[in-house]
Image (cartoon, rainbow, N blue to C red; front, side, top):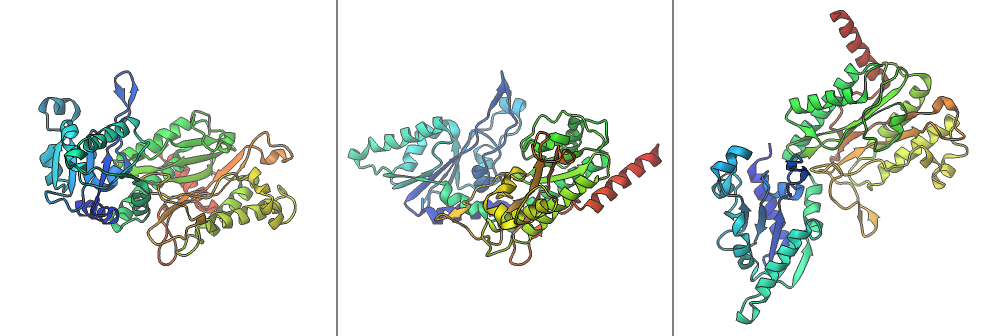
Amino acid sequence: MIDQKEFARRRRQLMRMTGRDAITIVPAALERIRNNDAHYPYRQDSDFHYLTGFAEPQAVLVLIPGRAHGECILFCRERNAEREAWDGHRYGQEGAVEKFGMDDAFPIDDIDDILPGLIEGRTRVYYHFGRDPDFDLKLIGWVNHVRAQVKQGARAPHEFVALGHLLHDLRLFKSRDELRVMRKSAKIAAEAHVRAMQLARPGMSENQIEAELLHTLRRHDAVVSYEPIVGSGANACVLHYRANNGPLRDGDLLLIDAGAEYQCYASDITRTFPVNGIFNDEQRALYQIVLDAQLAAIDEVRAGRPFDAYHDAAVRVITAGLIKLGLLKGSVEKNISEASYRRFYMHKTGHWLGLDVHDVGDYRIDGVFRELEPGMVVTVEPGIYIAPDMKSVPAKWHGIGIRIEDDVLVTSGDPEVISADAPKTIAAIEALMAAARSTQAERK
């Protein structure tokens, strides 16, 4: 659990960056209708959560550096016994101050009357324009209300500034408490992958395995951090496969890309393993290439290395491996320069990870890949995919899709793989699956 002192520290840090003549406005996520009167499960906006830890909808955070009557203000729902009987507890204005460390709090229904007065006297407004068009219009209306009173001595903002540039750079560097939560998230997801390996059998279906993943996550008070990919056989060659309803066949590989979200922080793990517990020769050869590529890439996740260095390392190992197997012709350098490897490996090797699976933060600064720094967390996920209809490739390779993904922390020394509890070597996977089958046989 992240302490409220950290949320307060984040707010203070952001206010130091925006300056004393600014106002920052961050609305909570909207509730979304799934169909008729049923809602999608509510998930708080990541930026709003980062600054408040407040999980309720219909709320707006306002930061006003230097304001004598309180710098941190939350507009939120009032306590309401009738509505709480239907929808659950609300913190109300007292709870916003006592439990979440706000300096002041007002009912969300009063925001039209109060917020223009808070905007008055500020020269810059920091805000995420474009996320919610309806709120954009409200904000413009509040500013215009202040501008209409300029002749009476009011001072209106003259500049809107994108909030993401400042806030997302803060989010890129994870604190000690954040890393504690992210390690827990990764541990939960790794346990789910282990359970899938232990239970998968020929004759089962992809959705049965998905159910086992969800079972593990919910046991640990987590949810999925994204829609899981559970692709067997040729389905593993579809990068964003989502149907998860195919059969598990003897002799096929099963690719599972699934992460946990714990206390809003994501993990993102992919493992590929044989449905019957034993890699065949072709699967073994390709799998080892991907694993070697991943290990080489992880070794590049170090402070001072450019972000793209670990992708380049994975590409080099994969290209060399495919040449050795005869799936590519020519030299490593030629195949890399011509991007020939992209027939088999068409995506990048990773991304930022944090409150969002594809977390915020610039990958380039002034057009150049930024250097990795301690506290950043990335995914490392090389793969090889040979679709069933891939021409000029011998049939024995067809329908094999392999990806191996881990979550890696940049430190001042060696990289830390926080998702290491999920086995990934051929020997470890086969041993785990064999032990699970042996245990099941004994019980029978």
